Image 1 (tube, rainbow, N blue to C red):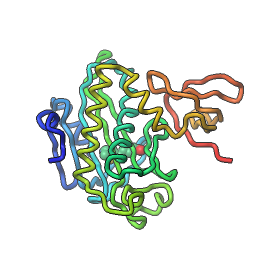
Image 2 (cartoon, helix red, strand yellow):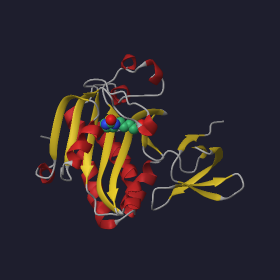
Image 3 (cartoon, rainbow, N blue to C red):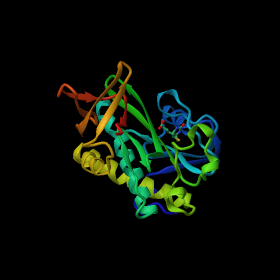
Length: 256
Ligand code: BTN
């Protein structure tokens, strides 16, 4: 009911009580031909997927666990901006739902508040012959967990919007705020290109201008995060004053 009128006809929501993972279900739908605008939402997931083969805790009714099916008319290498775009939409939905809540984006697409993780994004792509077939954008936002709802391994590293706001968050309202913000930005991106994403992302970024450690599979190294480029790569000046492009890998702030 909270979706903006223009979107109601283009979005089809599949809502489940329980799923293994909304990304897994959305992949089945997309493989069977589901159109762009298909959204899979679950109250809880028993095999929620995180990045890098990690699992994602998806407590029942406590968060927004959803996956969007997209069929963007772009090249596979241009899809690297979609996770960044999604993170911007999450921050916009947070700001709309809890005005004044301070959160930002850790490159490429984690949404953090008080240095803890509020939301994670897992995008998957299916491409053939250099054409995108579909992209799945999986988004998990911690909404109504209290501290004791997080499993022990997440204590101190995860945070919910309720903890930030001091009050319970309306899940339907948040979900609609996110989908509205996402679609607005997605359409601008398809029309205007990378600039539509880069500007808002830079404004919400937590790492730019900071000393960071880059964790790559080849090893860790330190530098100063300068900017992102048109493909969403992080540009980092290393200790030898070389500017290096980081496309995959994790970044942490260097403290002290
Ligand atoms: C991360 O590791 O930060 C990414 C977490 C992504 C979690 C969301 S919850 C909805 C969607 N379905 C999944 O199985 N994962 C994503």
